[in-house]
Length: 403
Image (cartoon, rainbow, N blue to C red):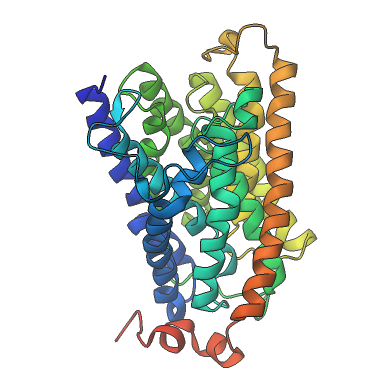
């Protein structure tokens, strides 16, 4: 039976999650690039949002949630032909569920934008994102949330540690590596042109994340309330961890560093948010802030990959960390909701690890193929003169600042 309270909460959550991409993520990434490329980043986020919405309606929702086999949903829900005003998903209308999940399908490929900013063709962004949504995001969603094989194993992923953050983080690194680095990487890359804008975008993401995590309870109840609480605790903790590390390392805490820690804490708590208690929120914030900070240097200095805005380090590592630690902090002794009957911490940790590893392998393999196809069809990299002069004017005929 449809419940009006649950429906109202998921309607609000849907708006909050869309708010994360438009304008939250767009402004967060836009402030981190050079002024001559801010519009290109906004175009990437806006274009992906529109494209993903239509693909979700046409076939991606069906791949993710329609009945099929353990690996791939069927086409019974293509064009939402089986969805009516009366259709229900639990205690909410199916239309609301479809729309809520659509906002996840929008933000996940948009997260990858951060890895390849300032040097990629706009057409390549749209094609890569479209193919990736169909070949990576929708199938993995089916594995975890659509009754697929990982769901049957009992994997814990409340709001997208595997589905959103591992897939996007790993695939972003692949795209960045195959695309090549920005001019001057790693020692002569210019700093963000508008740190204040980065903070504004991060603040919007923080607020929107309550819909992302607490909304994933799909009901207005105790699970939603706890998910909201631990999400906030993790974000605040990771922010302070990142700030303190920078303060000791460089002598000054930066605003960009502080809010990057915020996003790391949010990504880390996401898969565990509906399963852990306040102690888990604090612990995951500590772990996420520390490990994601270390990962930034590892990717750029050790791997020598120009993941420009640290998508793997913040989202991929954060999501994987939270997914694994959910097996520990979901236990009732640590204030969590408890594991399934008969399940042990070791057994659950094994299931979580399988989910992370297999999703990583599939994301790498599929993304490599997608990039090869895109390169062959329309090319990847912007012309050198366009990179130097900025993508705003070269690709879109506009400037972010007409002073």
